[in-house]
Length: 388
Image 1 (cartoon, rainbow, N blue to C red):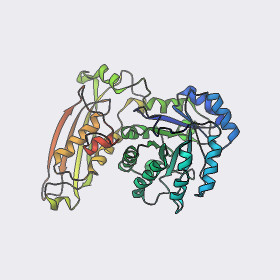
Image 2 (image 1 turned 60 degrees about the vertical axis):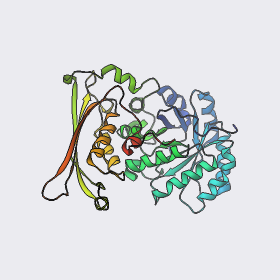
Image 3 (image 1 turned 90 degrees about the vertical axis):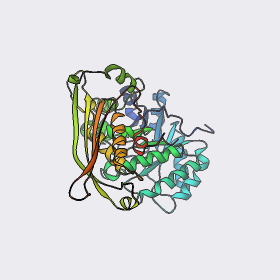
Image 4 (image 1 turned 30 degrees about the vertical axis):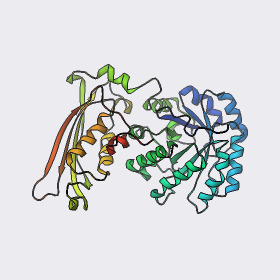
């Protein structure tokens, strides 16, 4: 396993990582996991059980296992990685806690990264300064790590989206791209989180609680819950192109409308320098024509989530150097139309802090066969392409 490629399981799609007990490995494969992460409910490591599960999987899916949340002691981490790698898993995840010794630990693991695909696990609920993450990812790249996952620690029930907002998570994914690292997101993720995170184009979304009965991490896998998550993450055979060709030209009567009304955010916008030096209240109204599924709507698999709209607005509003409202509106429209169910969108953007009235712009855009479907962070930024 020498000279391993850093991003060797990247397919251009988001993969479903199922964190399961070794005894559940066969079930996870049967239910459609793309990557089988072998652990127990408490995150402990059992070398014999993991080795047996790897044999049972027999290469049908990549397997990973975690070395656990260990103290930032370079030699202790190195020994733990050797023990996990000896089980035959394809990926070894190592927790990298905020600590003055973390940089020394990463440097110590560079030699092992030449032999073992290492995934650095970072914890959003323990990082006191998210601004340090890009520099940390650069160190992981220099040490030869294969990827990085941003999650929350096992203590408590912290949700990733409660600790970091969509623009911050998009920045993490973009920084992974810049550093040629696989990008993973995890941390008590729930099914409604999937439509919000997919537009960021992470390589991996990791789940445990959402796959279990009653959402209990210590519970057994629930096939129905597992299938819900699996169907929310497009598999290799399911593409937006298939959806587009089927119903791009549905009559208006076969479309529904969803909307966000009077959504107000502070934005730095203006052609004049003095306008960009202060935040101005901007009101957003977005109306989306949505393709109706052929069957009765049952759950979130059948809808365009409202969060896609509000997350897209936040992403665009967070960008710098936006001179005119038309740019805001165009970028929001592009984000919405990147969703396969969106057939058309009307975006109204208004400045509220302009004296006694308001001023604004309204645009209408329709999805076409050539609609650009780049990742959300690229569309929102108005970039020509995502960072490679």
